[in-house]
Amino acid sequence: MGKMKQKLAIFLSGGGSNARAICRYFQSHERIEVALLASNSVNSGVKTISAEFGIPYLIFTKDEFYNSDHVVNTLAEHQVNVVVLAGFLWLIPGNLLKQYPEKIINIHPALLPKYGGKGMHGSHVHHAVFENKDKVSGVTIHLCNEKYDEGKILFQQTVELNEGDQPETIAKKVLHLEHEYYPKVIEQFLTEKK
Ligand code: GAR
Image (cartoon, rainbow, N blue to C red; front, side, top):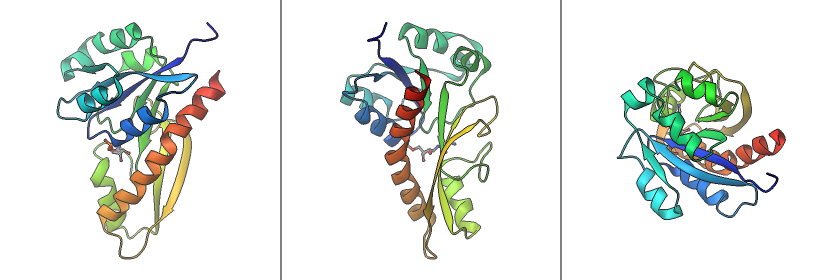
């Protein structure tokens, strides 16, 4: 048992730049590996990243996700012990929360509790930060529960915004932080638990 690696599944809905950063970080890690990529969308980065790193992937429908145990069963088959959400936009159903209590990690591209909740994702967040003329934004990494963006916060990092920063510039600054910190925070989280 001592030599068993901890196994991550990464869930993504979009391009998957965070998923890629995490796969790269754990590529030849001693204790942690990415065992499965999972997505609700064939148009996401899931297939490309799977091919690039030689990691299996699962694509599932809304019906499978909310009305069956297909996803939790597949995670169990791959002996996944931690679920990492990287730009995954669907609310996590009860069966998945139950199988992974305190073991589902999410990243949010703002300083929660600001700019969280349903519909607040990706560019919507950065537009809202821009409209409010905020002087800082940042990244939040937190545990998942049955509500959007309300689980226990594990980590936050701020970034300064300049007056001329457009939503796209804000997005770029925050994404840079995400890639830098998400893999390390996952590693830290898994190290503390074991
Ligand atoms: C990231 O900025 C992530 O924080 C955000 O979606 C983007 C995905 O980018 N997630 C949310 O907004 C969740 N509410 P990626 O596909 O390139 O990793």
